[in-house]
Length: 296
Image (cartoon, rainbow, N blue to C red; front, side, top):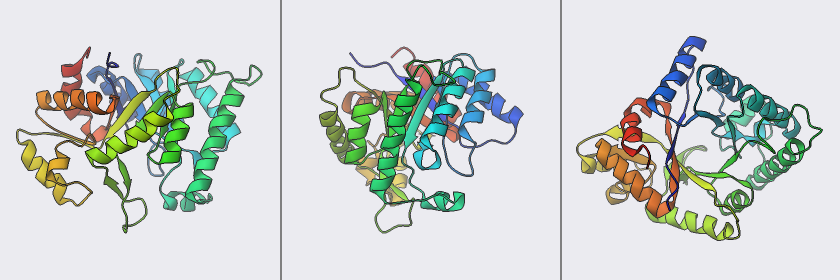
């Protein structure tokens, strides 16, 4: 039986305290299940933003999407996670990744390192969080025991193996570093390439006793009566997919409300994606799709 849909919105901007609280309340009213905050310089600081969101909402979970592990020392992160989980009433979901923008590390005065070193640090962070938060002597203790649910984001084979071993939720960006373009520039995975990525993950996760929830980040939501014209427009941006592939990629969602809902049902069947995240500029446009899929 298919896992029920769950919907998250990743909040990229903050204008004021009042505006932030209003936006979080609006997300709850629209039916979103999770309010999320990324971890990039120039965007809201994750933990205070989530605690503020908790104060004005009741139902949604609250998550990091995703923390850049290179910004954090594991013992200090354990303290932040436990405190935030307490202050959000046990609604925290912890998302972790390696980070992919070197300029942010340079600006913060933090080491960048090789891809292998960044993954090594992520593994140390996960292991330290499990050890610290699972220790009855750790203070403070998180509200959720032994720790909040862990989401790991990544597409490379080693990251997929780590996610298969540790994650409660596995997030797929549906993109990769664009070859020959500036660092931090991403291109979309084709549907077939995404199939291959999922096959690597499923092989690594074959021995799990409990299946992880699978997440996909939808980069744009567009309401249109002409899906073919939108697919041509996407292909024209040169981001890794042609017109036919653009019709099927789960990282872009476009069409009528009914068509977008059907796309998500098809993607859940093909890839296993039941947890769908959109970016806050698409929060209103995506809301009718949530209503369409309620209870699915």
